[in-house]
Image 1 (cartoon, helix red, strand yellow):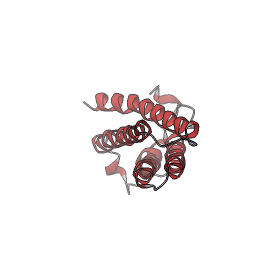
Image 2 (image 1 turned 180 degrees about the vertical axis):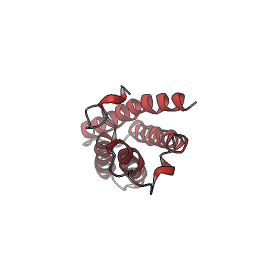
Image 3 (image 1 turned 90 degrees about the vertical axis):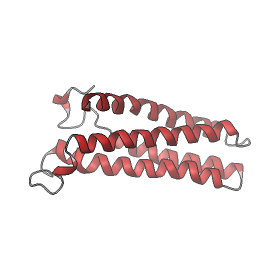
Length: 148
């Protein structure tokens, strides 16, 4: 079961990244025109995929025992253990916070220009945080895991 969750979490990462990039590109391209229902739905689907990713990640965090390692001696010295117990969790929670703000604040903005600006700002920050918090194989200490 853990392996299935890990595969879903890993595969959905690409969906989230693709939706974020498409949302940002369309917001940039259409920023001078009126805010369409399609752009609003794109922001909504991006936020929903991020929240599904969060639920899968939290399930993995509990099932794999990363949560129980918090406060244990030696966790902060290990690159991989520190990354999964603290850095990945905090980075992704912040990214999902900014993704949620990107959708909800753009929905409430008064002008079309502000809607696009808010999508660009908040989804852009979310994308940067996600890219920085993914356990890429070129990160020091992650080469031997063969997750990719």
